[in-house]
Length: 378
Image 1 (cartoon, one colour):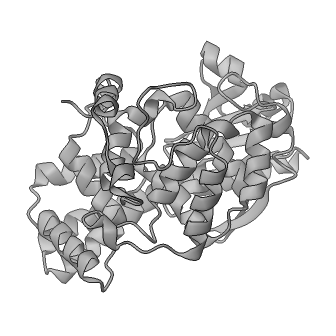
Image 2: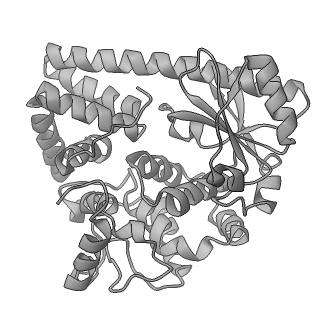
Image 3: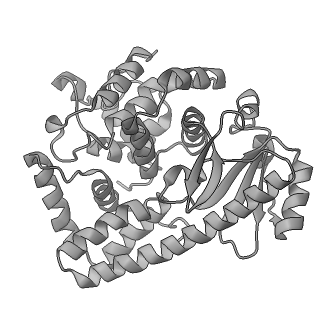
């Protein structure tokens, strides 16, 4: 499962997958009721609805996280037919990931053997899931990397768009590897504008172990910064994996918000973060998310501290991600009024006063106008 679906998913499918990922199994009455409702909806899925859910999970890079939970639900309900569907999907996806990770290790080793730096970006952010291609960054000269990839892996260089040329990235197709290998060289950002940040990526990198193999990946702050550059300035929408990935970082307490502010300020994107990305991911934080009863949610100290930090840094004064602005300005990207974000906001937990939770008519109208070309049909 490596290609995104051609047809847009229905709102019902997106909502169901979001609940599968975000609804807790907790002992509280509200959480228990939400989870029982989720199970009831999953257990009555048709094969067509199941395939739609699988396709959407694939395009959002959450098959492993979502369908491992789905498998437990089916097994506990003694639903052997749907359990077998799910086991098959998980087996295929795990096989794909194992192959891709091995190739990724071989590529990194080959580049390091030539005394060049190499850092994995984005691809391993979704663990235990994996993205649809393999992304790396190096400060090496492009000619050297191209020759290395062709010599060591018989790689074919894909044609480059003007956007690829501006961004300083090259795509390689390797025999035996379904995924494309995308290597960013000496630049980051949609137009290759992030040169200083890119130059320091390797020295700020950290090591992680995946399947007993060691990879050099971006620091937490750089990871969030790169993710933001991709989602808010290139693709203009969030995916479910972005919510789950980022909220998991906040919950784990590994985000250094002071360092994050410094990195994002140097990249020129900090002002857009507090009212959008930070508020959004913190509100959707997995330790606090409850899809059906938002008032019963509890926050960990880390989540509360992170939210307070983001609100203090907000230059535009938006009080919560539930509070869409009355007018769309440059500090609030259009994507945040899209149907994608609206669906996620519908599942996000409310907070604050009733006035904060209210979406006025002008905000809703901005949502309809901006979201008309997005995923969800009216």
